[in-house]
Image (cartoon, rainbow, N blue to C red; front, side):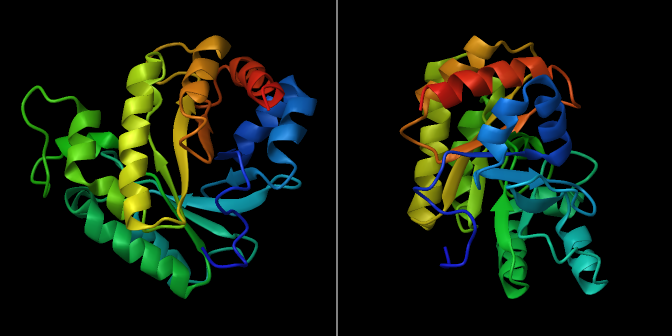
Length: 252
């Protein structure tokens, strides 16, 4: 990562989330929010003009490479944005052409970000391996996370400055969580030893989380990743995330 990059390996742990999530966590526990997000280790992401967070790095998220390139051409990216995040998933925000060829889309996103002086962040979702007509598809009955590792998509994600292994569906099983995060992160570092590696944690990844559950998943990968993308799942259960963050921050 270039010397002027605001986020680099060895300087974390980093906490990435939306600026809106930072605000609702702060409403529950202002001290925790300041400690996690306000000391250069927070990455405040948004979908439009950045609202930011005091002391955090400002970013903006796109689900579509085409939309990202269109906004750049139109001058619609606020000059305060330092990090451009590409959240490509099997969902309505990512065009099916990008879902079917994620590695090609990731490479183009990273190259475009760098041409425009932006730090690139890539967060592919494992469900990409279930897209019909994709370059890589999971075998029948194969867990999505296993197929995702086998696909090598995360090696392409590692070409970015920051990448996230979206591991939150496994956070209730710390050993499985660690295995997936470690395998994906190893691929990313094989492609780019300087990539800042994150893993996902959520208050509601299809099941209710507890602070203890989040802390156990966090603890299982402390020696693997540089930080975490934390999700409140549409703003739900900020008290759970605030309690977990206090546990994590107090653990040092």
